Image (tube, rainbow, N blue to C red; front, top):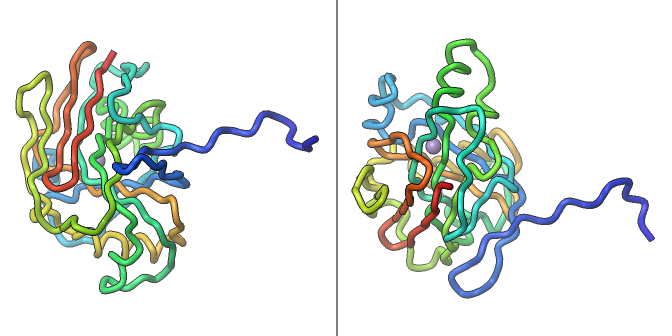
Length: 227
Ligand code: MN
């Protein structure tokens, strides 16, 4: 017996490299965290505090699963990103302590309805439906933090085998530790939180039928077929 008045939603989980499953509470994303990407989007990179947006936890697409081309857009774009998976929570976390919250890392793709985002920017409206639509967050297996250096490593994205994005974690404006610390001043972080840490330059459109393959050296890959 239960007093739930509608069926309880399932708990989104992401496979880990060791065969476990990481339960997801929230998905945060940081914007414009690589100078060259900020420039390609028409902004001057600077050291203004990082800004955040979110995606629903059930927008995650596990590695190898299809990503349906979303409605309401003629400009779906890929953004390959390092994803941080938190195993511990906290608030007002110091930069020195921030990496101690991390359970592991994965490769993610921040799929974006760029035309809707541009309209939202122009009209001063929220980004939610430009960024947080169904199936908007492909993610690879989460690997344990031990042995991963989140301060350097090649970040690449191939579309149908052609290299489209190429950067390095060392180019992040705000490091993983600095980003976690900044986010923890805005919200209380908790186990199960994911953080997409921004994308290097080279974002662009993807067509139905294409295969996206993102990779971060030392972390792994994510692949999805846009259908
Ligand atoms: Mn992004």
